[in-house]
Image 1 (cartoon, rainbow, N blue to C red):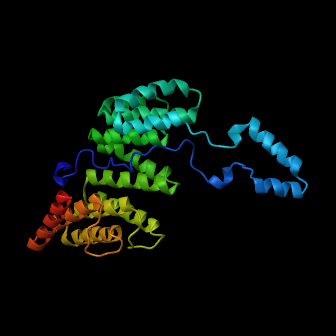
Image 2 (spheres, one colour):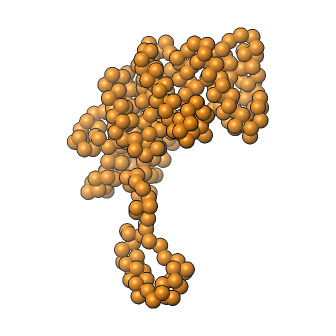
Length: 303
């Protein structure tokens, strides 16, 4: 059934699905804003007789630098950046970092995710799953680790086994808008792969909700997020039917107009949008639509 929908085997593994996780748990940054003094603050404190308190804060900042900035963990970030260019090297780096961060549970989980994703990038799905299963539940429940396992199960065709993981990520790990988007897109695509009218409708509901929230709560309104718009259009194409195909064409046309600076019927510089629009004309068929698709592809080829 998956093949009948003409969905590539690694469909859904684009750049917004696999992003470097933040070095610390996402929360309200205002609650953890470090104190940073300035010349203006110094003059104010001197005028108000609080210069001694200011000196104490300066000494505290000097002796306890951890309280004044967030540790970057650049070595872990470098490992994640290697995933696209050199997954073998990323796997080696993960082995080194696992020893380094063994006593830091939060960063250790990030490194576990790094190694699992490196195995995934190398198409070693069985080792990826076995590696994740070797850890206790608290590590497996890390959202990045859970996503890696769900992706590996999906790649092996174990769609039913992967579904609860995607559902848990979307339901329980989506407090932040960034996570809600990534987990919602991932769950919707997985429902596409499973197929069936109910699953396709459920996927459509997820994409529609993501679009409405990204549009400030206004329903049936294009949002400024290209990923959500393109995914919604593709989902409508998978669902099929003349009405859904026309809706998809409308989404791609609006995306193109926005990318072209508001000029209608004008090619834009975004190849992804142009290809989606050409494919949409193809699916609608008819001589006029096919000529429009040919014009788009020819223009892209010439460029």
